[in-house]
Image 1 (cartoon, rainbow, N blue to C red):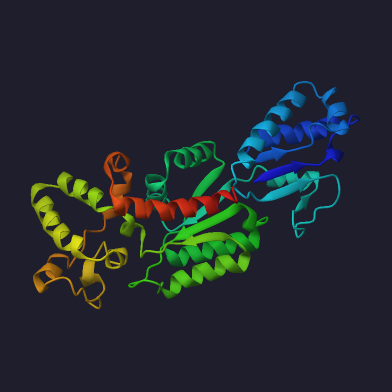
Image 2 (image 1 turned 45 degrees about the vertical axis):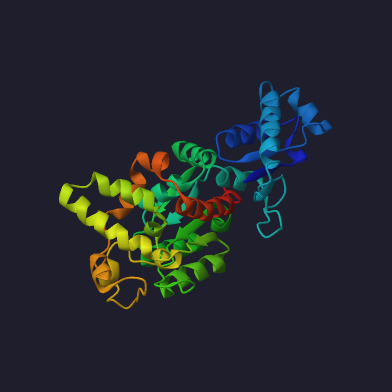
Length: 320
């Protein structure tokens, strides 16, 4: 988010007002913009000590990031009344002091698995940005505990806190058994986010497990105990025969059995379907936690998964 400091804040009589905001913004996730060439700033900087050069440095650093092309959300801090509904929300000093330090919240179904999924597929630069934000407590992955509780948490946040639409994001499973038909619960979460203006990304595939590249599944299979490894290797042979669309919506945890065998796979024989019958198990998403994932996961299926996650991240960055 970009915090714009109005000229009226640079008071020679009360330099501490702008100094306080400079310090507050410096210890936050926000970019800062101010007219550092204007007369008000120049007069203020003469009495602001180290904070004049510090603000100049912050503004120049922010300009470089803004030029990167991301359409960041903006707020304007001024000495007048707070006007949340303006195209660029205007905050008075008291409200700005409350709002600026609030961490950004990403609502997910499982804060460990969903975070590992995102970080594993992101480009290095993007991943490092999110890791830094989280380490500084400027960003929090909020554990939803499944789609039902996720919906409740988003609704509560929107109804009980200050402008959730400016400081929250969500991404969540599609849960659809076939392409372009997300589950009713997933649609409900998307509609709730739209209702409150919260930016979000409904995964195009069934779940985060459906983004695991085959190369990573093969590596994971090689790490299992011998009997389990042999079984997984047998499973991967028919799994590779599925089309991209079929793999995108395959029940990775429980297989066709978990869907009561309602999905037909024309390319597979009866024996091959039987091999996939119970899927890859409930722990398959732990692949994203393995250090080898980023080093060795590769291939067209990795690039296809990473492309969607890249889109997700760029939408997220417009709000952080």
